[in-house]
Length: 52
Image (cartoon, rainbow, N blue to C red; front, side):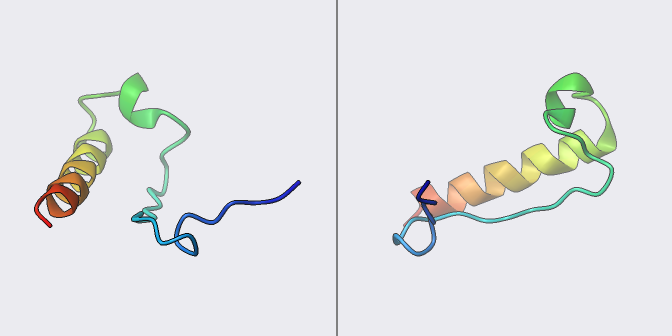
């Protein structure tokens, strides 16, 4: 199986690791401070991407 690397292909991505956050933690506990931080990080990334 061939692995696709978004960065090597010229794509835009950021890797954020949220200690204590399981898969889909922001959907399971949307009001948790960790979830709010994760959503803000995604929005900042998207704003930077769209402002180019």
